[in-house]
Image (cartoon, rainbow, N blue to C red; front, top):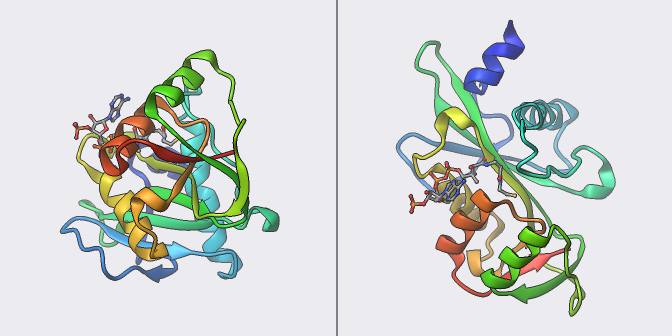
Length: 193
Ligand SMILES: CC(C)(COP(=O)(O)OP(=O)(O)OC[C@H]1O[C@@H](n2cnc3c(N)ncnc32)[C@H](O)[C@@H]1OP(=O)(O)O)[C@@H](O)C(=O)NCCC(=O)NCCS
């Protein structure tokens, strides 16, 4: 019952889990962050939200990196909306970012679309650097089309103190993700492999 409620509406919590992000204000959204050094319960909260994204990935439209293994070093930014029926909040979105060694290069959206269509990633011309890379971002289907993804990504950039155009985006980037990132960042864009 509880899992179905989560699947339908996102994950309820009394208050944001982790540290609340200041600096990106939206009337409906609250953002918080959970890092690799956060306590286990906070990391489990991110893991539970990721399970919902996994479960709702019906046609395998997107690829979700594994979360929770210490080597991955993911920093999670969580997005909450007020819960209309109960006091508290619903976690309805998240992004995962990491600074570890990434193979990155700048690509045009035409090149990225070609990669998506062929289904094979082209990491020729990459160099290994530490660049903040967004590994994944997700908005609960019930909350899509409200412009929340742009706020999620802007809040991620604010919190990391990296301009959106200086972030890299982990390939493969889904078609829906390409639409939002290209509006935010323009062309070309950093891609991480
Ligand atoms: C990608 C995602 C976060 C977008 O969330 P959203 O809340 O619908 O996005 P927004 O409402 O902020 O829309 C952003 C723009 O992208 C466009 N867009 C969203 N989904 C799209 C799709 N499937 N195809 C083409 N364009 C799309 C919107 O039309 C909007 O453009 P507009 O402002 O010109 O209308 C959401 O679809 C999602 O979670 N998808 C599954 C996970 C995923 O693919 N993540 C991407 C990283 S790989």
